[in-house]
Length: 113
Length: 113
Image (cartoon, rainbow over all chains, first blue to last red; front, side, top):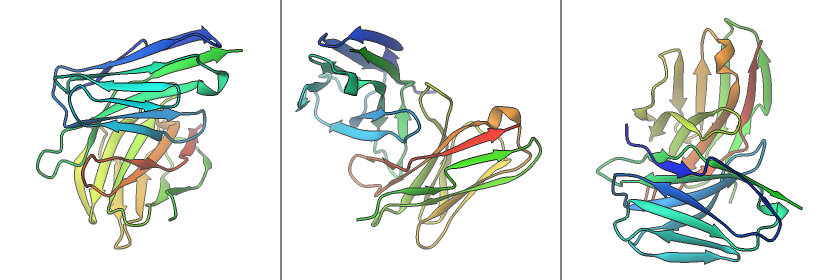
């Protein structure tokens, strides 16, 4: 089974700290997406990265796609309590009629005031 | 543009019963994926429907079945409910183009007693 491994699984930090979440695989993906999910709600798409080495910024969040398109990272600067949630990465291979995503198991982030 | 909607929001059933969950896809999307999510974990892929046909299935038993209708809305049916079927069931729609970005509904929280 092709999997995306996310680390760490759990993270509890104080407001104002920086953090990085990793998403790794031995497979190459044509694109990789990051989602954030709050309790009782569905995941919400944050960003899609498609080019090896690509960096995208969303306010205090910085996303990077590895040069070989096998891994990605999410860095949050000066975390705030509103950043609390489950962060999920998902990869797409776009092969033929393949319309499915391969999901990581998630990183549960708690930012304490 | 209408987002993904799911019904019901919450549901309580007893072991052995059957349940039908419903999902309306986002306007313009022809692909619907269903996921089961345990608390604090990533979504587990159940199956996907593309233009009314099943387009891939995860590691779920046959008592999990589905349908997609001409308007691309979808149903998930679960027969002979077991206690372990208690979870958040998520529906996601996508256009199937480019990067397979998926847009999630709020989910249905199923509790099996």
